[in-house]
Image (cartoon, rainbow, N blue to C red; front, side, top):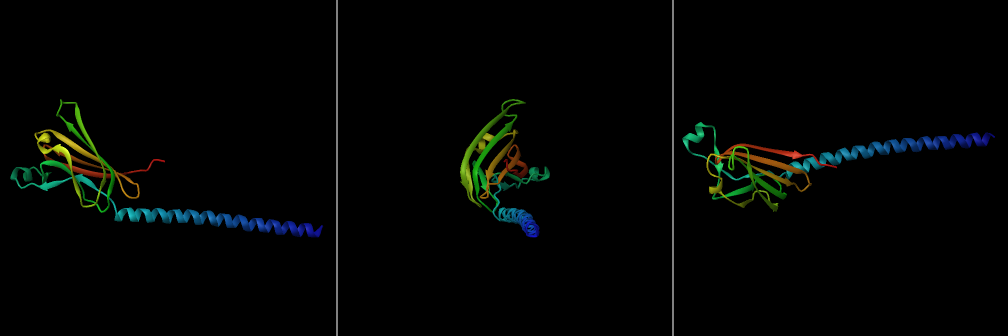
Length: 173
């Protein structure tokens, strides 16, 4: 009977050691996931795309007095990646307000599979098509090399840029 008690104590001690080992293994896995997340965020910061409409400075007194300093550049609307990484699966859309009536929006869309950092690409939209007092926005949706999704939006009044924003969308799933 004494050997059965000793064997049971040894089995319980072995079970306790295994439970402690599993607890430490779970903590280790959680810690490495945190390290992986931090590493991915750091590498994303080094290669983050930012896509906008290519702009050029305005040199007229009226625009400067109105607080506007940039206008659309070139004869065609061009998109430029001013970020540090490539933009993948880039889709863009132009929403014009006031072009087809007070409450209607005309939408123009396009897609580019890849736009390297520091490069630009012309869209089929001619600058003359967007002139006038109409306000419109250009929204670009794209992915980084780590598959993070970004949305950038440039706002215009006439041909003058009035605002720019970029946000990273949370991954679904």
